Length: 239
Image (cartoon, rainbow, N blue to C red):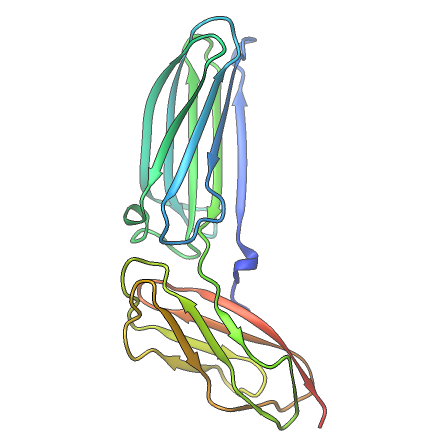
């Protein structure tokens, strides 16, 4: 089974608006950050606009939770509860700011989070509900390998990435799978990887055994950051 790479990052958005009577005159929308790198702050914006000619009072609750890849919600990360009074034609914004320290120790599986917004207009009972699941982006592993080799030819694979967290990565380990390997090659990082440090590793000499198009997969895991994965294509030519 191949690991999931950044190319498979997930973003699912569901919006429901309940019209409990005929008066629906407040527009609302939740806007969260796209392509947030793990270790960076997350900002969620809730936009409200009063399209009526009367004052509207809106109660808003925005909740952030971690979520498993199966869709099962987990630990709450942070919550915003607020109310806003809007004059006719007025537009207003509420913000939920999530710091890395709020979520890093709570993430599971594929570093996914769920934003859930629930709002109600007091005067009309208009109800707005929005759920947005998204995956925090993990750093890319930069793979350096030949585009093509000949059967029996030796080659070396190099890999690197930058630690995006504000804390060291400990017990780090790269795994290389691909042509010339009878079993996955494990490269253990002997020292911790400092915040912002670029870690670089090289494989032993590999030798491709069979011709054809092959995929080289490099993964990285540590106690603090796991499930990094990227791949590169290698064409193995007949001797």
